[in-house]
Length: 80
Image (cartoon, rainbow, N blue to C red; front, side):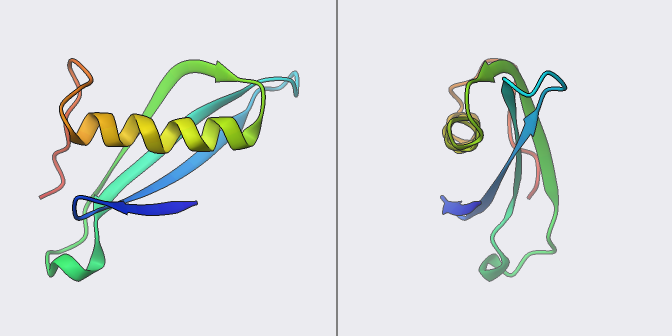
């Protein structure tokens, strides 16, 4: 799943745990191709777990937006 936010392309990839009951998020942030810059990307993950793939995907996008907005201490975007 991918979304554009503030000139960045956000792609969420949920990961299922071996037990099959929980999911975690992984999200990749890259410059949107219309920005004209050479594409670079950065991947983030979280230790949070979710009961469904859809919830993990949705939370991945929210997490990436918070990182871009500077709302996650210790994490920042460095793809420009």
